[in-house]
Length: 280
Image 1 (spheres, rainbow, N blue to C red):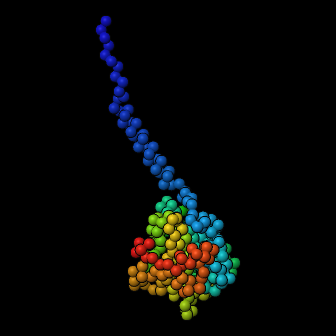
Image 2: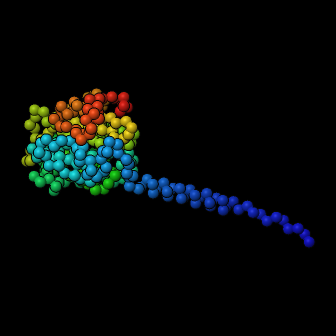
Image 3: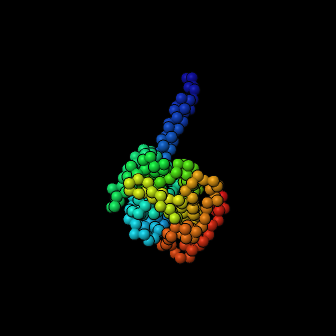
């Protein structure tokens, strides 16, 4: 009886190709799901903020009797005298910047949460000033609700277009870059009025002549802080030339930042300015 040839145990080439294709499809699906999931919670150094309201302890000191309001992505202290915030504070993480996908709709509107009434759309019409975000819309892309709330007029300050779209925009973009590299930041920003009484609209919305921003890196093991004071005009210097210590911002604005930090940590952060730590 003739011996049969050994049975071919190798899979046909088309089966191998199909298996590879299925692995590629599965990998692409997992990558899609990862990129579209909600930002993952991260541990916060110095027991500083989560994305919710539990960072109230380190908010600036409310010395002006301002109305403090918590929103989804930021907290602000509304100054009725100028019809805009004295400060806006929020946390920004690498996940929020990298994976945020909420779209900007430019739906500017009055804020019903402001007891005394916020500024109105008519205040800005034909004023020569833009509605300048203090908590930037681009920093709120991680949440549709946070994005919507960033367009409340309570979060706006009158800004010249060549300032808003110039050096101020450059600073906001730099903060997002730092959020990616440093992982967790706390940001506080607002207007400053120095010997100025310029207003716009029937509600007399004050036009600041300076703006400030302070940034605190709360990612261990290295904690650092940097401040910026910018005259409300077209930027004429490099970004690093506007950088100052937190002490200088506090002296200029009269606002006490991060007062709930341990004294030794607060003093070190506020007195130290090392531009090299921030990539300048």
